[in-house]
Length: 432
Image (cartoon, rainbow, N blue to C red; front, side, top):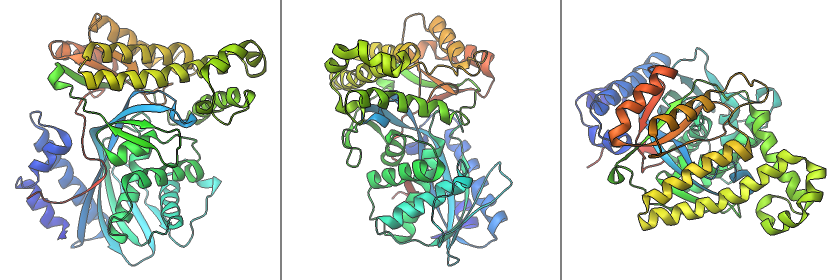
């Protein structure tokens, strides 16, 4: 390991540029931006915890959901990809028995005593709850725990559907795994631990797609029929070779306070399954629902029915989308992505919150996207929905026009041209 100041010197000298290209792409100015960003993180650590300290640097990506909207929590099938927006953490081990963490942009420090790892409802929704939950989950699986000090910098947009919470959970797990467990826990296990932390400690009933994708990296098809042992398939999605760029636009609607809206989707889907004698929709045959739909809708309500229909159709779209990528059928892939977006809007009904019908940033973003793309490419809402980001697959020849229009509506910092990232959560080391 090296001290923070020595690592900063190496980064400024360009010795980590090859790693930056792997993690963040090769667009003009990318390496320079990351040198500045990593140096800021190292300086932030030194200012927070003193220098000189021997440190390591970790990086965990955010993710985009490509298809399979709101199917993971009912053991469905999803397609997702890690992206070049990430959380980085500068870390130094300590013998304090406490995890201390500061983040750029926040005045307070999280401090978690590793001898106290029980869920606390009073801590729900706080980053300290995620830290505590990850540590508890690792300990329950026989992992070793130890203290560390960390300073994090993140460009995974909070509350935007790019899974900032999952990236944070996987980051804590990756640190503990490498620093105290010789990296013996595989990425899937770290994803499961992250989901446990989010469900039991953070108070959000999320599925598993986010944590798995952030942990493994790449473009993935994930079958969650058995969520304790998900089947993960890597998908070779090469957008540049198809003349496409993935653009995510932050419509500036924070969805971080909409846990009840997300929970309602899961509970309504499960209410349909329960009415048919099953625990979740993956255990239900679609034909059985269609045969009994008249009686079921009387008991669970119509929105639960349309959300269940979305689940079944969406799982089928994921399988077809994977096949389209494997065949190199870009137009079929884009058509399925478009259908996925319409199904989320019309049947899953998570384009905006019914509590605030006057705020429909996602709806506006999709309407503008369709107008600019003129039938080319594809666009859809992504992630939890209700507020936050939309994604678009934009032909190269329309990229400038599309981004200019979206920035004009949502702000200069709203539009992000993304690379699909191959590595998941990693400890940064110099490449040979």
